[in-house]
Every structure is written in structure tokens, then in C-alpha cells.
Image 1: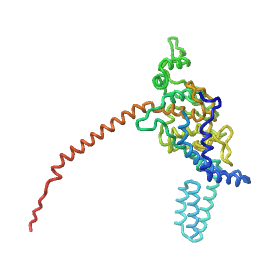
Image 2: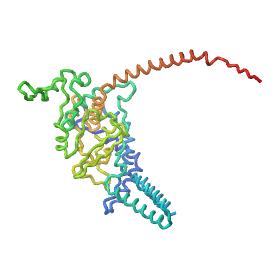
Image 3: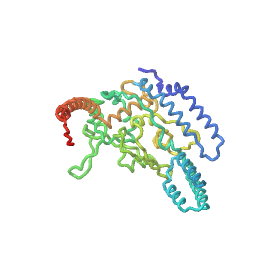
Image 4: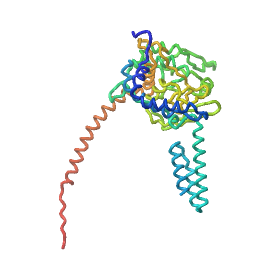
Amino acid sequence: MADEEVVDPKQYLEESCKPKCVRPLRAYQACVERIKKDETGQKHCTGQYFDYWSCIDQCVAPKLFEKLK
Amino acid sequence: MAAGRGISQLLKKQFQFGSLFPSVLSSVKQQEAIGSAGMKSFGALALLGIGISGALSFASFASADEAEHGLPAPSYPWPHDGILSSYDHASIRRGHQVYQQVCASCHSMSLISYRDIVGVAYTEEETKAMAVEIEVVDGPNDEGEMFTHPGKLSDRFPQPYQNEQAARFANGGAYPPDLSLITKVPLLLLCILVNCNFVKLSIPFLGTTQWPELCVALLTGYRDPPAGVMICEGLHHNPYFPGGAIAMPKMLIDGAVEYEDGTPATESQMGKDVVTFLSWAAEPEMEERKLMGFKWIFVLSLALLQAAYYRRLKWSVFKSRKLVVDVVN
């Protein structure tokens, strides 16, 4: 029987994959800074967000199922 | 030339924003046909104006081009992927438990009967016990009235709503789709109707990604939206969903279900199990199909070798004959 607190392996893997995806992460953070001053409400960082999460997904997906039953 | 520059700028904007302006292109040709220098520069300015206003109208949508197609789902190494691999039946059983406790309140699975799951995930007794818990409408009886009886193995999985309208009404205009075939690649286009305040957006959805992958990614992929993106009231952000705004809230939460076999019910575990169950539901014949496929491809390749040999045997007469050309001088 596992311990009382269930820890989602996906969260853990996403954290451990962050070092591999530093560049898209920095790009996203830079974008967030850039649009902070935006008044029009039209600017958004979807592109950088997708690049970052795509990188994380590629890293996590092969390893995730080994951690699950 | 001014017209040439205008056209190249317009084309750049087209590629940038992925919009199609076929009518504008035809008007470009018309403009050039008209001819004089004054008209040409005016035409270029007009095209620039069209290009800019077209670009701005696209920018006014909260979703960028990428969000319109959704974040591509990554490939997972499913245990049933291989050429002779079967389903993980324990996973199907857990997945059915997740479906029943989490999803069945909104999603129907009207193509699956209780008898289908006997021998796959549950024994006959267990399935019968599950079936009698539901009430099934039957009739009319001799008095002309409809009556209900407890479910039997031959009955379909119960539907949470009477009809689509009831489903939409209960879910703020969004229809929770039937899950019987959700993991199969459907027809080329699947239109998902989303109600956002007063506007119904029909988002054409090209099946470019694998559906089981997409289901897992969607169920476990609820995240904070990117900076600058506003999600309509009543919708939730999910980058894998085309458009980024889905009506379904995050349903898989750690510990939501207590598995019978004691497996820790994390979000990704539940996602994997429920999608295995849905894959089985969409393709219950998969195991038999793979066995049959392997056997028949082997048999047919032997037959191919035999046929090739026989053809060459029969043709050897002609392939090895000599033709003599008698040239008369």
C-alpha cells in the first residue's frame, strides 16, 4: 500500500525536466515582462507558452508511464 | 514597384496570421489589369489597408494561431501499442471505475452494454451486480404504460441526460460528448461547439494528433493560461483543447477515486487508466484483430512467395526464348 499522501509523478517529472527547457522558459518569462506594461489587452504570450510546455511534454512523456502502475 | 511591394507585404501578413484572402488576391489581379501608374499605387495602398485591417481583426481574438490548433499532445508509450500487445486489463478495470465515479455524471457511453465488459474487466457476477443498480425504462406494458426495471447484462450503460438539449442546458450550453468512440480517429473534421457568452464558436478540429494521447493530455493538462490570455466566464483553460478554452472543469484530482486494488489514485494514473478504458471501449476487438492480422499477414506473405515463384515458372518459357530477325538485304 502506498503512503497516505499521493504524489503525482507527473508534477515531479515536470519539475525535473525544467533544467532541460530553460531556454523556452526564459523566453516566456521575458515575454511576460514585456507585456506587463501593455494597455491594449491584445498582447499575449501563447507562442512562448506553447514552446515551453511542448519541450516539457516531450521530456516527460516517455518517462511518465514507468512511474505509473 | 509599389504594387509589387504592396503584394509582398500583404503576402507576409498572410503567412504571419495564417489567414486566407483568396478574394483579395483576385482583386490584386484586377487592380493590375486596370493599369495606369496612379491606379497602381492607389491599389497598393488599398491592399495594404486591407492587409492591416485583416491582421488586426485576427489579433482581436484571444487565441493565437497556435492556440486555435491546441498544443500538440506528446506520444505516450502505451502498453498496448505493440504489434502483438494486448490491453492492460487491470488498467481497464480501474479506468471503468474512474469513468463511473467521475465522468458518468455528464458523459454517456451509449454504445457499450454491460455484457461487453464481462471477461474484460469484471466477472459476470460483478457485472450483474453493477447492472442491477440502474433502472432501465422499458415498455409499454399491456396497459400501455412505460415501466422501469433493474438493469440486466444486455442493457446499455446509463445515459446521464435524456437528450442533447438537456445535456446542454445542464452544462451551460456545452454538450459533453459520448465517450464510446472518443479515442478512435474519427472522420477528418470534428466540429466542437462551444458556447461562450452569446457567441457559439465552431472550431474545426483536424485529427492530426493521436486521440488517446490527446485525451490523456487534455485530462491532465489543466494549467494556468499564458500571460495576456483571458478566458471567458464559465470556461476553463486547457492548452491542448483547440482554442484553449474548454467547458469541462478539471475533473481528475489526486485522490478523487479510491481504487479497489489499492493503486494510488494520482491524476496521471487516473488519466492513463481512464484512457485505457476508453481505448478498449472504442476498439474492443483490438486483441483479436492483432492476432488475426499477424497470422494472416504471415500466411499471405507465404502465398506471395509461392505466387511469385509460380509466375516466374510459367513465364520462364517466354523469358528464355530467342527471336531471330532475318534481315532481307
